[in-house]
Image (cartoon, rainbow, N blue to C red; front, side):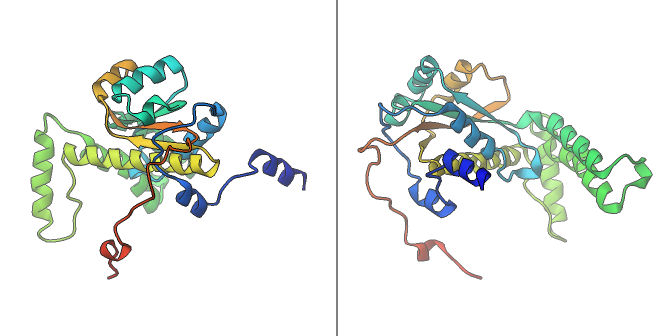
Length: 254
């Protein structure tokens, strides 16, 4: 009972998943009088990393902006739109496609530890497949040279696809999309986590991403997925009722 009381004390207003989805809106103006608990925001970022992502490579970074001077710089790079200018904190979601060798190696080490100490010929068929996935398939998909290898792979896979189902998104432009999709899933985890504890967010695409990279001193090969304004909504922070295309126009059962 004591543990339950502590949990309730820590999260007295935490919403269910359905409630968090309903509560989440793209808040354009945040209440200037309400500060955020940085540790709680950090916890939401930690939960973001539990999002599903392609091949578990986790080719992302999360830059949590709490310094008000840096918030102002990034807000300017976001054209000082209200969701950035009034934000108490910001989260910059960054993709890092060229980190795939390091992340693949980390997965291999994790799998070997999970499988236990074994000689190479002692792995089961399933275990060997999992290891070969990161040793052979991932390098095949992510390695390229000036787009030439990607085009060769694309043509080869299209030919194979004439005879059997095959993965066709093998060009570097395709892999870039894959990485951004994974980052976006993590961003959604973050925003729902924030909504669950009564905090608000606004994902922004309108920004000078080159300037943001310079502000954060991000290396070459990284890309800005989105900037998320964080705060608690002002009474005028939501610009109107939520509108969605009728569900029947977008839902198809087969």
